[in-house]
Length: 356
Image 1 (cartoon, rainbow, N blue to C red):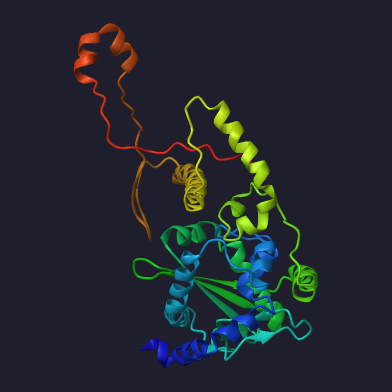
Image 2 (tube, rainbow, N blue to C red; image 1 turned 180 degrees about the vertical axis):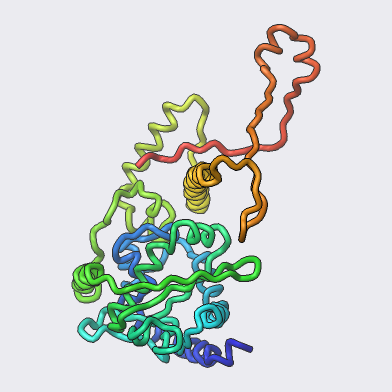
């Protein structure tokens, strides 16, 4: 019901009727959610100005992007929930933006800000109205925002909005899609130096893509993880096919095991996602170790305490016990053979992706 209550149902009906023309119009400008691609900011497994150009020029995708469609749909469904929670937490009144807004000087720059934060009532003193961008994040990315702050692409999007609207401040609202739907929010001030970069890079993109109808040069090597999962990777980097084949033959020839060469783009995408997740886990584990050491220092000489606004905390001595398997095997081979068992529980993958 909330979808129709706020007018979104009517917007969806219009979009269904005029979908093709709206899509064509979107390919004439750069929107706020695309700025991270304009500036080659790695995020969401993407972030490439050449991919953005492929989209704007209407190239057919080599592979579908179904996951992105699902994430966009989730964001649309939960936008009203995030807006209501933001109003409750901040006391600020919001107003839905009726339609997209173009930059006063550049027709190739547009923004559809999620909400305008009305002046007065809990806003920054004398700040006037502000722009609000709302995002939804699953638990892992949400915890990352709690630890490190908003993603670079989200900050670029709210800055793009401020550049176009001219408002003196803005905010980001990040809704966690888990548990009781927690919400984080951050106030943002305009970054004039970044706005100058928007102007320069946007004008360059406009001339190459919108005016000349050409593709910009690839901004990084084809070995970049963004290339390996890109939906245009065959059309974009097809000229490197021979080099890729040579590399594959070298890998096959030097391997100790007999390798069967296969071409499975979906598997490449999945394994690249695995590598990205492992990298994020390693980063989280490092941050966790640092946080634990900091907590130990802050606890001081106390070994057990009740911490106000948190709960109980104890400092315990770490103890590790293990069996010296090699010594057992040498000195007590009969017991080793009887009690040290080896069995198969399933299979796992050991991957060696291309370096670069």
